[in-house]
Length: 239
Image 1 (tube, one colour):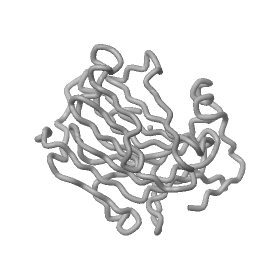
Image 2 (spheres, rainbow, N blue to C red; image 1 turned 180 degrees about the horizontal axis):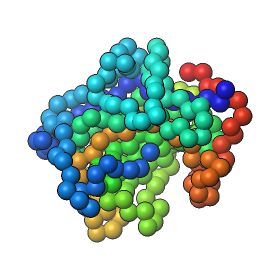
Image 3 (cartoon, helix red, strand yellow; image 1 turned 90 degrees about the horizontal axis):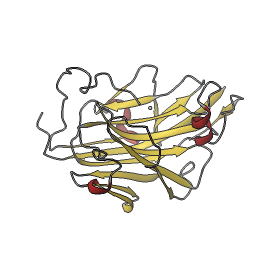
């Protein structure tokens, strides 16, 4: 059986009080009228997947996702090329902090992601490539603008595919900080963001998941970024 998985041990969301009420959106408000987004408000929400993963009500599973839980946390498992197990928060935050403790999936062409994303495709990312056990990538987008791909950065981290680390995003109206084990590794100032309106500044949901970026029908540039084509020979990652 072909099987690759990530394990998420815990997640915490501390939302700003400014809200009172893998990439796609169900309703883009730049294109049509959309229903109001439910907010975290000023509350802090947390899940310890090692203890009560199945009862965590912060997230819902997207179609095709079926998680398993054990003492190491929530396991997102890929068994075939079309799988992209993902969970998404029920509510939105408009500035705040998100922490996730994760061991990313191993495997050439396999990508693990922890993403903040809005309905109009503002985005703040952590991404791990399954053939790189020495670093993690950060990125951001505004309004789905992919006209250039010069916003990403790479950060060294000890064995992210075989050990757990805490990865955090601190998002305010003036800056984004990315942190590994509570140490800031990157800061993006709103004034320095790409383009005139390039800073993420609309309410976002949290998404966690993994997907096959090295699929046989995937665009060549994506396959190269992911480290090559994914082998679909029998493989099992035990976490």
